[in-house]
Each structure stands twice: as structure tokens, then as C-alpha cells.
Length: 200
Image (cartoon, rainbow, N blue to C red; front, top):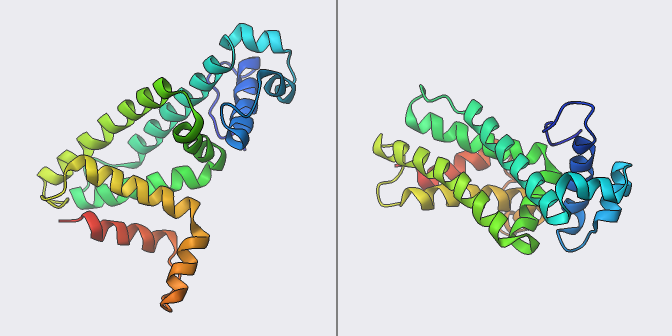
């Protein structure tokens, strides 16, 4: 499955370049892969890649922007503003988890953004995503769904950060639960647990 929706017309080679770049960036990070390997994986020449994206940094930014735009679109469609605030927050957490779980390469790319990416691209992505998310949490808090002692931004990063940990650390989570004899959680039980942490 191509995890990125096409950014260009269907026959445009730039879609194949971005798909190949996502796969290789997810495996090796920004510094671990060169444009020659990406061009080979996309079945095009390295000069064509450079022509379209201006090099590896431009391609990294384009892939990152596409992931961010797709993420915001999917979450925007998944959360019904007409729902009661606590149900809307629960829907947002479910959609957040489902989005990254269904897109493991995009999830790995997002992890590499923090470890090995371009600082200005990470800053732009963070600003874009947190503006929407914090505003959503502010509305939910004003409607009494989120704890009043929890800054809305912290509610957002608590939910998002723990979901990311949930997705990347299943071995550690299972081991920690096994020590005390507790049962494994499924995704829904984990989202319900998160809601207990931030719910008013």
C-alpha cells in the first residue's frame, strides 16, 4: 500500500519518487540514504530527482509536508464537531492511533524527523500540527471534557506521545504488564485509559 496519497497527477514520476523516498527515509533516516538510492528505487535517474525536488532536502520536506497534510485531513474528517466534547476527544485519539498504525512507514518517518531530520522542517510541522490540536483541546476543555488543571497543549502531547509509545513499544508494554500479572490491552482499551488521564 502506498501510504502517501498522490501529490501530483497519477502518471507523474514525482509520485513514485516520493513513495520510494518515504520507504527509504523510513528505513534509514535523512542522513542514512542518498538520492542515488532513492532514484534507483523509484526507477528514474538521479538528475530527474534533483530536477523535481532540488535534492534530498527538498524531497524530505515534500514527503514530510505530504504526511502532515494527509494526517490533518484524515483527523479533520474523523472528528465530528457536533459530538459532545468528550466523545470528540475520544474520536480524535482513536483516529490518531489508527492513522499511524495503518501507515508504519509514515510513522517511522515521523520518528526520524525527531532523531535525524531537518530542524526547520520539524519546526514547521510541529507548529502546523499543534496549532490545530491545541485549539481542539482548548475547545474541549472549555466544554468541560478535559481536566481544568491540565494545559490544553499538555493534554495534546500527553495523548499523542503515549499513543506513539504504544505503537513503538509493544514489547516493553507487554513485559511491564506481565510483571504484575495484568492482562494485555488492545487499542481501544488503551485509548480509554488515555481518556481517564485527561478527562475532567
